[in-house]
Image (cartoon, rainbow, N blue to C red; front, side):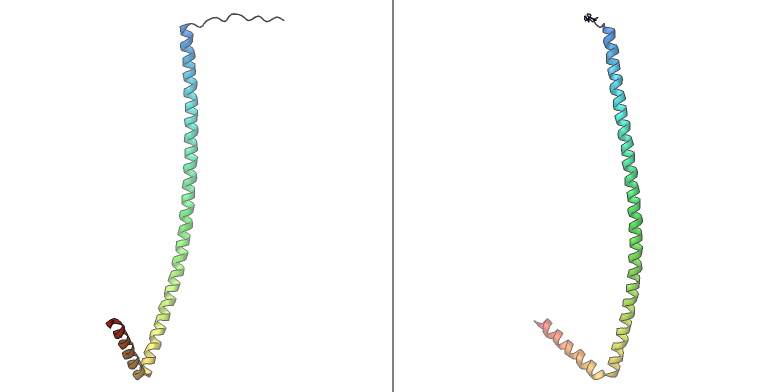
Length: 117
């Protein structure tokens, strides 16, 4: 079979407008699809970020509650120890008033000497 190219027919100006319209439609469709894809991806990323933030908030809340509970226990223990030390000091001063007064005077003299310099 022998192929002989035929001479293409030239396009008329109305054909050019149809081609440019088709190209414009193609560009707008691809821009729309890219824009739709970007919007979908943005929504997906936003949803993932919101979920991560909610998970972090829940985790932080749990940790804060646990730390608050531990701090409350430690505070109560500290207050009990302070009360016990206070009671022991009172007992010591009542049993040994001379030693307590002389000790207080000695500490006062030392602090006075340090502040004088």
